[in-house]
Length: 391
Image 1 (cartoon, helix red, strand yellow):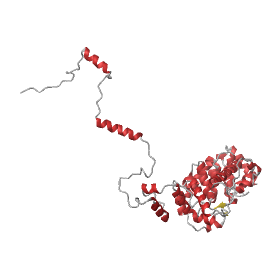
Image 2 (cartoon, rainbow, N blue to C red; image 1 turned 180 degrees about the vertical axis):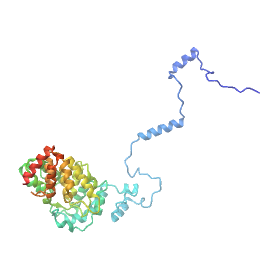
Image 3 (tube, one colour; image 1 turned 90 degrees about the horizontal axis):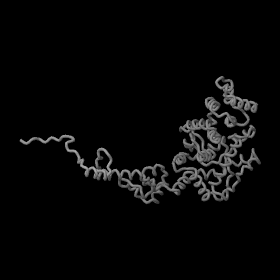
Image 4 (tube, helix red, strand yellow; image 1 turned 120 degrees about the vertical axis):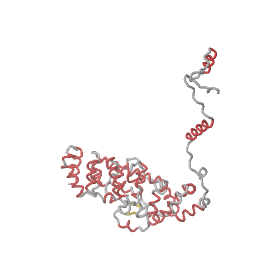
C-alpha cells in the first residue's frame, strides 16, 4: 500500500535564487502576504453600488414616476379629466393617494384654482368690508372653514401662492369694486406722524401694483411701527400702537379657519411672520374648543416672550391669547422676558388702553415683593416706571 503524502508547512519555499529575487523586485510588490484577488462578479457589484450612491436624486416629474404595479384606471385618466374630477369633489386626499395622481395634480394653476374655489365665498361676501376683532359681525359668517384649514396645512399652500390666488380672484371677479384701504394704513398715519414718513417706506397705489407688492409694503410698515414702539421711551406712543382692539380686520377667511401649528409654535423667520400676519389680520383666530391650537399658541407665546419677538407676541395676542391670560402666563412673562425696552412693551400689550388689568397688577406686585427676584434691579426699575405711568 502506497504511503499518504503529508504536506509540511515551509517545505516548499519560493525560489530564492538571485534571478528570482531580482524578478520579484522589478514587480515592486508590497512586502507580506499578497491580497486575495476579487472575482469579476464581486468587483462589478461593488462598482455599481458606488456609482448608485453617488448618483443625484432626480426631480419628481411625471416622466420619472414609476411604479412596480400596474396603473389603476383612475391613474390612466388624462390630466384634464383628472383635474375636473378633483375640482368637482375638492377632496384634498386625492392628490396624496398616488404618486401618479399627485404628479398630475401638482402645478401653479391647480393650486391657484383650488385656493380660489375654497376662498371664493368668503372673499365675495367680505371684500372691501372691515370689522373690529371684538365685533359680533365676525360671528355672522356662516361658511365653514374646514376646507380652508385643510388647504393651509398643505406644503404647497405658502403665502405667495395664496396672495397670487387672491390677486387673480380680484382681477376676475372684483375688478370694478373699490380697493379697500390697507389694514396698516390707520396705524401708519396716526401716532408717529412725520417721523414715520422719514422711514423711507413709500406708499403704493393699490390699483397699479400687484397684491404681492402691496402686501410687502404693508408688512414693512407693520414691522417699522413696532420697532419704533419698542424703541420710544414715551409710554403714550407705545399704548396707542399696542391696542389690538382698535385695529380693523379685513376678512380673508371663513369663521373657524385654523392657523397652522407651525406658525403658532415657531421658530419664526421673516416668511413665517408674514404668513402669520396675513392670517391674523385676515380674521383667523385660535380655536380653543375643537383643536389643539390653543396649547400650541401658548407654547409659541412663551417662546416669543423669551426671544423678545414683539411682532409675533402682538399677533398671537390678537389671535386670541389675550383672552386666556392668567396668573401663570403673566408670572412666566415677568420672569423670562429680557430686562430691556421689550419688557415694558410686552407688559403694555396686556393692558388695553390706559388701564392696568387686575391680574397683571397682582403679578407685578408679587414679582416686586418677592425675595426671589430682589436682585433683578433692571426689571424692578421698569416695573416702577410702569406703576408711575399707570398712576
